[in-house]
Length: 350
Image (cartoon, rainbow, N blue to C red; front, side, top):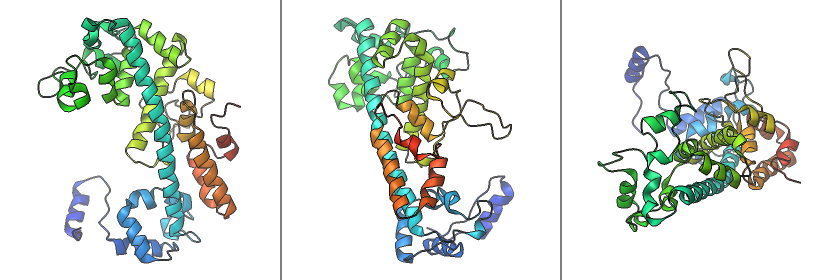
């Protein structure tokens, strides 16, 4: 890395309202932690970890759990160690892995259900194989959603991946896949159950929003739901998509919050007794954001979350045993449920 330039930094500060921080090399980073009274047994080990791991994730991501006073960093991390940060970071990565695995199972089931039920109704014979590209086989969302809703734009502005023409290099999405995915290129007319393998969660969400009633009803049945649960199902996918993106982009999942761009469905809040976050400025419930524990409760509607539950309970038990409750208790609170007993029964069916 180049040495920082005080001239450049000062110019940035004068010309921008954004806050910035100068570059610190590894030694400077470790020295800063020493000044904040963090116990570091081996400076070289600390430098190695800071080189392997983003400082923002490893230190900034957890420091509010360990600082003596969150409002005054200069007071530091007295009686805390660098190993505590490593422990929290390692836990987060393990939790991330298990959550992503469970969501992948849900995503696979959703893809299978969508492809099977859509094809059964609209692509039932070979000559109709590509009828999943026909717009009139999807619901015009003009009446169902406002004009600013993503579903409206997916249909009327061709933002749904299957409606985009041209997609890339003046071709539609399927032709693009035939050129870039060998398993799709084997087919002259690739069936939906092949094409849908390439869909991201956002594409799946768009498709669910656009399903005509006969297909939607069958998809809901596959997840033990009825048409009355349509909004609950769609909102669940929105929440799970947010959580999946956090995990897939290797963000700290213990800090997870839903994006806040859509309201949490009232029936979902009632059914699962979700704890929606208060509006920070007005002190009122805005029904737009939930934390990790409540997002996992949504996931329990569709998947067994035992592997996720075990990671949390095991980490709690380990830290209680070594007398480090100061690590786990604020962490549980940040994740949305401070009581370990509620984590122990998360998704438990009896």
